Length: 516
Image (cartoon, rainbow, N blue to C red; front, side):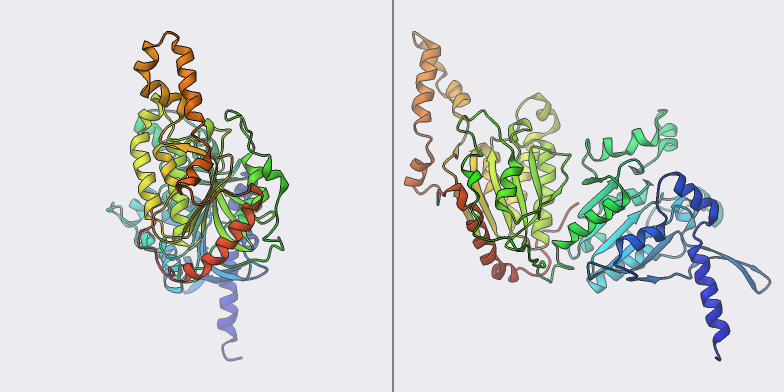
């Protein structure tokens, strides 16, 4: 027992870290409806599978040579098992100085980020912290140039391992930006806010009185700006979303995505698919019923469901293999591509291309959204970005044209080169522009000079509609194949199975850097 006194001292110091910000700080955390940092770690990690790093770091108080107390760092870091796989976790402790920078000890966040990069492990941030504090100026006796060692390297990390951010309180400053330097982020209804500067900063800069909820809760960040992908009902729900998201991805880009056994027959043919698309072109339908009919049962995890809602995107499984899935939503601006949907889709394409997920697109694209509002938001430039993002992808891609495909936006179902497959349902129709609007433009003089302009326009439209059958396009081999809608799942499962060997040739970082 030579070193017994030191072992006892070690345990004593660990006990200080378990106290976090003390009883008052913990009580305030509970009053706000939030879990403590250590409760969060226990929830997100498999049972007792968290190995803490830097637990002894803190601001120590001595009386002579005798240690009286250690105020722990307001950041907890370590490795955790999540569904049996190891990830690096950082968690802010709001009970210690509100999680601000002057309550941190050393560069624990930077150490964790470097570890994720060097060990090639997923990186998870549980954020409940503010950024810099003017109190730091008093502590160090000067101001300083705003640089942060944690920021450097994140641009490379995003190209190599999954990065996730959870907003679990009022998150401001650098941690707010960290929340968006991620492939997926989530906030919790009722307890989470996100902003670069809080209400006091807004008041000082703009003279506006505003609450932290009005400034940065889910209303602005999830539904309006799309800065946060998903909204959870509770912290437990947020952690479950993180688990789901990571379950589709490899631990790093040098690995294949993990296959799971869903027990769903790859040759299943759902009879409902034959009737889901109405014959009347102006009638809508439920796109989620199509997803349920073709994807592995209960495997769809939707990402960013409340923003850019004319396109539904998410991760799923086909015959157990992880895939990226997109489908237009005709119940939202007719399914057309607006600026918000474009931003959302570009991020999603990057995610799937980075982590080697085949893309399955069920296309019903009427074109880019027109009108003065979208014009003022820059729809033309947004469309140009969408085209480039699509062309830059390299993952295997299968498009199933289920209804319409028009204009420049319609081109974004296609990716020349590489492993690409395209089929259509008998309900499909397409063109450079819609016949109704196109006739008014192309035949304006003919219609105007006729004895009955309304009748003449209808006559021309009916003539052109007769040419719009997908079978006429197939005769010219302008569409590779028209399939029975009930065969969609078997076709997709076969494609995804064949894609696995192709994906193995793409392991490693994508040639196109990931941009959050």
